[in-house]
Image 1 (cartoon, protein in one colour):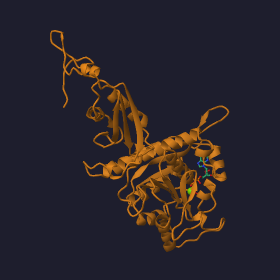
Image 2 (cartoon, protein in one colour):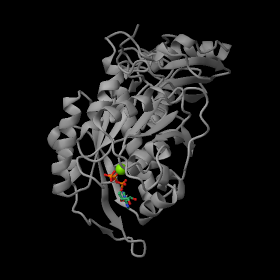
Image 3 (cartoon, rainbow, N blue to C red):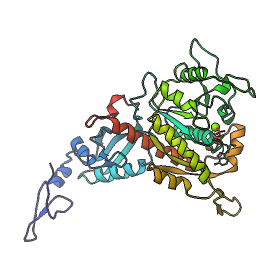
Image 4 (tube, rainbow, N blue to C red):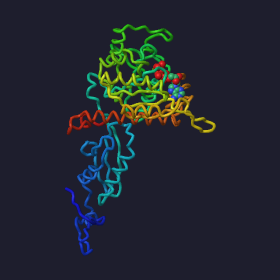
Length: 394
Ligand SMILES: Nc1ncnc2c1ncn2[C@@H]1O[C@H](COP(=O)(O)OP(=O)(O)OP(=O)(O)O)[C@@H](O)[C@H]1O
Ligand SMILES: [Mg+2]
């Protein structure tokens, strides 16, 4: 229940019309008596904090756990829908403010944990979300972006797999500096591991430099096996690096599983954008929600002068995203260390974690994960909260 009153002081005393004060809750006396802050007060305060992306309050989203009050210090845990939540600091700040406003609260400690929202359409796999990284045009940096997005999500604490769906020209093993798979146990293939993510690629199965010639049915079954016969374990996100173009791989993949979302990588030029449109149409035909557009090779900052050069033009990705009504997830600068690291098996997130490019990739990963959470949570029927479906890891 809420009381509406015109004027009151911090101690909830109400000002009478004649200017004198009337005690109302007398909470201050209670505090002095040592009456503890109650859990329901904390919950009521937190029910006014809105999760900015989901647009609902933390309590009705069932995101608040483990409230403990001790000696005026309130502790609780907020369960996010992704560990890569871009608005964690804002949520923390608003939670603190709301609870500190309660009488008797001296301090607030907010812990965070995450329970990644699941795409309920992905069935038969221990994978909560499958994200395809595509472009209409080759060479725009799909594989680079896919690798670094996977690493960025893993850095935040998510369980991440990376599938090289470029069956014809697999290059993730080289980009991650892993040559072979661990020994096969039983019927199932154990994926390789690199920098905390699990990786599967046709590159592990064929001799390097040998062209891979696939006919339709073989390609189809290879992709199925990559999903079902690989011991991925439980994954929050499987990032799929798509081959260039709009050929049969996306169609084949979508026949095996729902794809939770797709991102389109483009460079700023019009010609790349024209091709990005093809990527968009493919996703739309396959009923894959587009999580957003990523513009790669957006600009170059000269290391000696710090001057920014828009080598391939500017703003094309953002304009395109606006035009088609999908989020623009961010711009990744050109950095020679990206190309170098791609060849030496050290992705930029590992080789230069503080670089502008690495930071930009992290931001893109967070925006992408947040958008996916929103889509997954909005798929739930009204009134049903997704977070309690799965036990929270302590
Ligand atoms: N932001 C960047 N700065 C510098 N080099 C980059 C950047 N992004 C990608 N590259 C380099 O550009 C080349 C192409 O990138 P990548 O292989 O990721 O593209 P792709 O879209 O996956 O290509 P394909 O269509 O052949 O699969 C690579 O040598 C990569 O290292
Ligand atoms: Mg590639």
